[in-house]
Amino acid sequence: MLTRAYAEALDAADPLAAFRAEFVIADERLIYLDGNSLGRLPRRTRERLRHVIEHEWGQRLIRGWGEGWFDASQRLGAKIARLLGAQPEEVLVADSTSVNFFKLTLAALGARPNRRAVLTDNLNFPSDLYLLQGALRLLGAAHRLQRIDSPDDLTGPEPELRAALGPDTALLALTHTAFKSGFVYDLPGLTAAAHAAGALVLWDLSHTVGALPVDLNAAGVDLAVGCTYKYLNGGPGAPAFLYVRRDLQDQLLNPIAGWFSQKDQFDMGLAYTPAPGLTRFLSGTPPLLSLAAIEPAVDLLLEAGLDRLRAKSVAQTEYLITLWEAWLAPLGVSLNSPRDPARRGSHVSLGHPDALRLDRALIEAMDVIPDFRYPDNLRLGVAPLYTRFVDLYDALDRLRTVLVERRHEQYPTERPIVT
Ligand SMILES: *Cc1c(COP(=O)(O)O)cnc(C)c1O
Image (cartoon, rainbow, N blue to C red; front, top):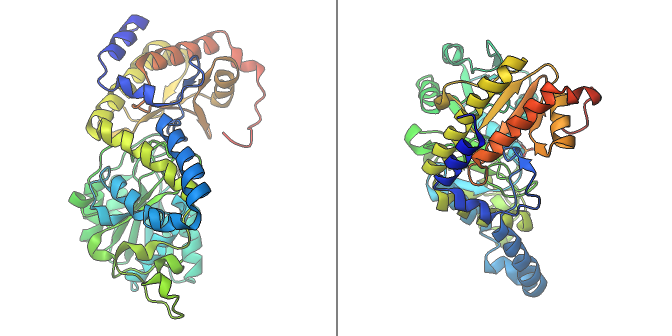
């Protein structure tokens, strides 16, 4: 298992291997393990954007709105719904994950007016915690944020969260796959526990969508949001998705209710009447160029099939852990991700006191792009559409070289602006 020939054999047997050719690979030596932060560019997207710019914008001009732009948020949402176990009319693409999270938080709190507690954890993405604080500030002093902390910064505090749910809980808001450790919450179990307490749930699926199957309908999930520029490969800053369960849609109100959320928008009426269904969760004009880039990328995932993607992702993170144990654990590198693949997303975090400098050495001298997450995580993301087993073999081999030859020690310890 520790030979490069073994990795090559795994690639030769990989049923998804052909999908790599669908992506722009500008530098064959570069090993890209950051598809969990920004996915690669699909070749089809390049063609699609050329068409949107030259034909739709360049020639059709304002007529484009009647030729596919106006309902692009809904059309794309319906496709992403297939990756989430949701109905086509339950998912929209608009705004950023942060904005959608804020909208759905306030909508949920409005639907539980007599409850005052919002429950979350410290593994949550910082943006979500800031937005929860901001939403509660808007509502005055009555609400409180109840944050339950992980015992080890790795595993979600599930028993403590269940115990904290109660008659005052309005909303349980969690990130399904933790961005540092890759820990995966029991989404059906916690959703059921929240419902038993009369609370709503809001799941952030940013590190889940396109990598792990979820069944939002089967679990009865109320609300969800997520990114399209990570495993969905939608491009930098691509708009995010939001999900609202069908039977809740007409009960909830959008706090950023712009004209795209208005019933009969082009009547230009002066009084606000929310559109029926999910459309009321739009706000303003969507960024069409970025929206157009998402569709061909999502098509690739649908063609590959989530079950096959998940099977390959599990095999690849298992393989990373095997190599870590043989080569890197003896050099003082720890595993900061769950061992149980059922509880692990599509990245593996390795812990080292010098993780920041290891990250720099890999990027600047070894043609490997992982990323660093404070304080000591070197994060290795596996994107099964285009990551090969030999990439994982070579990346850990190069990391081993850096450690053995202490090459990282020549780099400064200051943190760059973006990691
Ligand atoms: C990446 C990520 C986000 C990013 O939100 P933006 O509004 O797109 O900046 C939000 N939540 C989670 C869990 C993420 O991993």
